[in-house]
Length: 330
Image (cartoon, rainbow, N blue to C red; front, side):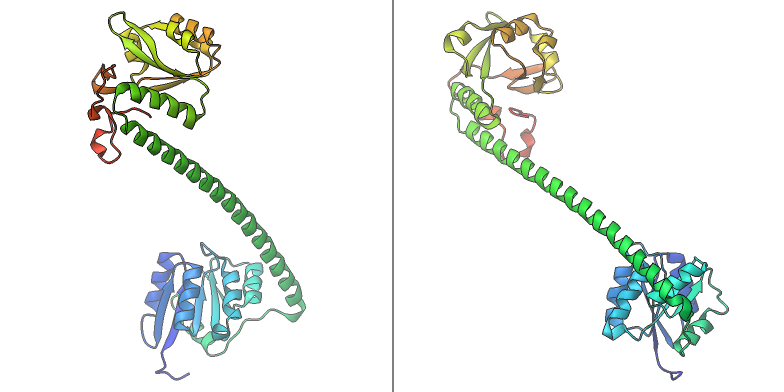
């Protein structure tokens, strides 16, 4: 090898301090140093620059150095590339495994800055470390077993990742369907021309989209201070016309202070005796209770009345994000 010929060296090492140290040692002609922080990055760079020498850590974050050495030596264009394992491990087993995997030399950390370049040149000039023949077969068998074990672990990890990906995909599809359903409901509500139409459409949409068997819209009768059924689905008309509920504003403001919709899994836990009595009459096992109103300011609400005209200000916009506080469906 001529003294003026450029020596392309690829250093694959995830530790930045080690890369800096090797860079300082080889930062002069005839060396041209390339660096990679991961095994896959190093493999890509090796294919691009075709280095004469690869200095490689064995404990890389994405792929082991021994597996990378096998891959590099399997490529025709890199088959003759000299590979030196540079690692903090000093035990004979690690050395044997690195050599049988395709490495041509083995150097231990910490780096001897006074001898490092000379040792590099020795490998470039033909030096090779070999395993004794009587031990080679046993080392190869252990290396193959280690590869199979590692591959098995990787397959299990991929299977777990694939299962998680499928689960997340299903969740996203479910969320997308729910969002599409909600947008359709909001669109249908925006088409309503009166509060009576809104109530009917809302109740029917709730039963249709959420598969509720029964749903009722309760009007507030401010004169009599009670809730009366304005529209219902799945409830006998004669029965719903008889159902009334005392309306106590502080109670309902407190109930819907934080959330406009509440789910009750057990009617017996309802504190309001009037509500509990109605639920008993309807043979309800569980129910959802929500307030349809526009919050104007703290502790005040604009309820939908019985007017024929429905103000657009009470409807949530699908475009204008400034009216997110005008909630109809959570």
